[in-house]
Image (cartoon, rainbow, N blue to C red; front, side, top):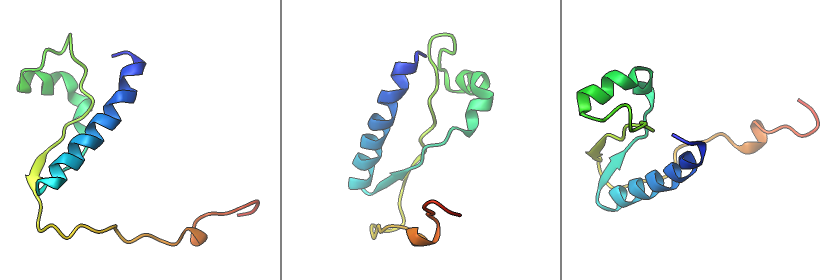
Length: 84
């Protein structure tokens, strides 16, 4: 796959995941299988010589719909300016 194509993958997947969420579904972007891309292509019937895999996106119903941001450390505790 040419380098320019990767830039359009992220916005497409992001939109796909947002559409899933609006329907009570969730997904995750995983690339762990790419170490065995040829074998996965054969298993899934993907023409390996013609198509490059960019990820797998399992889809499932979520537990509830009360989505909220995850807990994060304050930026002041992890960002450093001009010193460590």
